[in-house]
Length: 430
Image 1 (cartoon, rainbow, N blue to C red):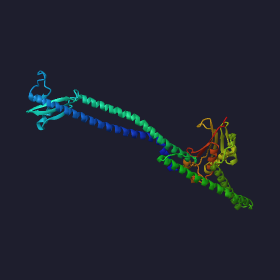
Image 2 (image 1 turned 135 degrees about the horizontal axis):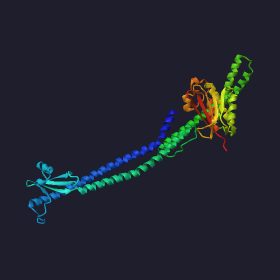
Image 3 (image 1 turned 180 degrees about the vertical axis):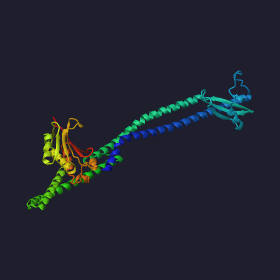
């Protein structure tokens, strides 16, 4: 049961898993977009630098020709030359020309406000000679490319993330269906099935859940049939035992035998009642009933000292025989396993609104054990030694009848001590 609860809790986190999947895909798309953008940026920048160097070197060849030949006849002598010579060459190039054979190039970014430049320099007849190419257009083109890459990445995310959420939702919806089926099976709906078709992993999980439910249902039905058969087979020898015990002469031993026979007969009757409840064959015979009077009479027939408080005129449409059985079992359980005083209160349930009425049975004993509070009453288990001895069938029968009449039975512990059983029933319908 604990493993099943952990499995259901994990399946309950599927909504957060959907966003984790979307975040993972978005991160992967971002990483891919950044990687592609980086590669495109690097390749484009390298191409621009290569073109700039080639252009600068060609211009350097023209400048070398003009420098060797003097001024070109086609150019106005009053215009300055298109190259730098001697001290006009930047110090960086002059230092490199002193140690490296030309021609060489240099990408100048020392003046960002004016823009980057591509320099080409060489030494001609002992004189440093250099030309400069403006690379501002290439830089602006590269910046525009980076912007377009960012826009494309954002557009890709805007498309990929919704598609990922949709795809994840289609998958997780099937998993939630499996989780819902497992939850219904845990709550007692043994006929619940996923009815999933397909050949993928989720279909395998669904098929495994269905096969588990089939095996569990068959096992429970086998146990129910065994309990019913045993109880039914015991009735015949038990009837003879009751008759024989009534014919014994009066004595202390006779009283002991008759008492044990009565206990055995009550146990067999309880087992038969549980078998009918487990089989789902019980149906409520609903009719308008004044709940206060019904509970008062049920408590009076127990013959036990119990305080009864009825608040208001509470009429419900329910099965009086089953409500009497529920209240009787709760009161007997409180006296047997709890401590005095035992109090029964009938009133409108303020927590569920005016549409329900509650019957609260409280004792002042050690309280319900933690196992009963966590998993509900279980047959043949009283939960704790301090709560006395018994078969653990009274609360199980009360819970079964509560489900038949459409009510709700909850168990809790009072502060500082004491057990509280609360029966909630709907009021009479118009």
